[in-house]
Length: 125
Image (cartoon, rainbow, N blue to C red; front, side, top):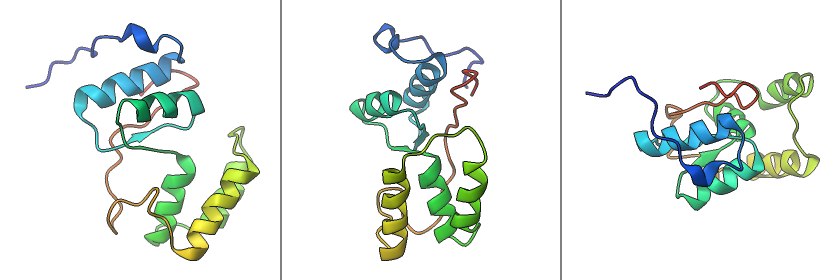
């Protein structure tokens, strides 16, 4: 039975924002299938710790491939927010979608449960 306590913090993660620290620590403690994280430093640290990471665009692309949403419509709506995405990243996702090479974010052919979602602005999970 799991207790309601937070996992112990890792001093080696102090260079990250509180939300990223909490997400990585929790993902490791839960042995999460995947960690949704967009910040570059947090992604790099999560990958260094052998966590499978994906970002917002990866989730949208995966949902598009499963017929759950239209990627272009979702991208248009996302651009109306303060979410930053580089043109290079958007181009890579478009290229993978057009060639069917979505292996970077697809696990199998079905949309799997996202184990952990982070709001890095507030540090909440």
